[in-house]
Image (cartoon, rainbow, N blue to C red; front, side):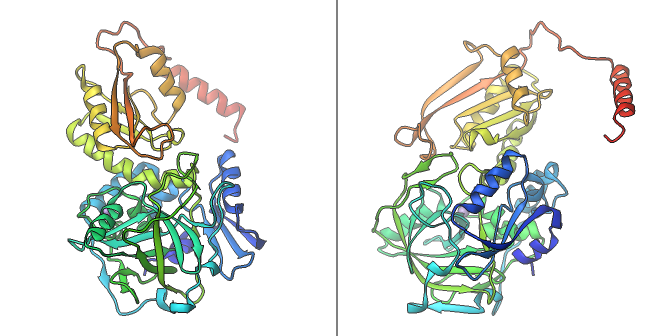
Length: 452
Ligand code: MN
């Protein structure tokens, strides 16, 4: 059965950085991941003996595009979109089984104590110990369709968390409708499962889609679920740890700040309260952490599935769009597209569509096919030589946006679309070399530097 363990077993040892000695968990995984990132290194981190806790911690699984692609069943990053869309178009529903390792140990009532889990502090200004790697599973109070998503959880005691549903996603909608019926919203928090379930949980798909069906599609087989012990929910049978509980209706209290994907520490919170009813886990569980903030891991997990999904919707309307990239520098707020423009105005058409498809976006730049949208120097070259600010850009003020943008005003921001494609009457030719000359140069260099 696919689990976090089967995935870890499949990882080549050179992709893992193992810490066999006792390590302090507060801040250390985040500091290590960010230091490694500066050197363009993205290993998975494995802490075998976290100080003061009796289970190992793994982190940084999602820090590299190639690893994420392999989770989705593609050989490398270039194949990710196709693998994702295949799963989205061929979902496989989960099935319920009688038992699973996630319930080898069950704590309820007074036995519940989440403080014994290696939940750590990540950034200096964080209000406390936070779970950022929990998949929150709940059900639509009207249709019963499951929802999987990530929401930050601040540990406040043995059985209490502060929760922020600030992205106003499906879980927020579910809670509002539960509240209107005077009911709490039952939620199971899954920590540690096959990473394909994490990718599916990060996807922004329609409310009527159960993200577990997509996870099944990615794995090519149904996810086995077991029924929770204290709430009406089902969770992956082979998960590591599950926290069962309820988001309280009509009750709020302070939560935050927490280091967010924007690179800022933020109080912007819906200030919800999550009360724990049970903790179930494997006998010897592994705690999965996700490096938060604007780390490579956090931003990639948030955007890989979104990129594939949005790209496909774009291409349905503008088939000449060739590629879409959400650059890390833009923390989900910027996107670059390349297209093979056939008529004037096509780039703007695609840009408007892009803004409509993704409310997080504030800046979108369209370039021609010859520009490498994964290379920001190339993007700036297109701006420098193919763009005039008085005619080639548009601004839409006061549009619904993501509130975590510290510059947003009352949940709204302006959208800036830039058409940096070559105008049809363009009077310039890009410099180039004869292919034979390039080949000669390559051969000469290969002789001088044979190791390359
Ligand atoms: Mn959903």
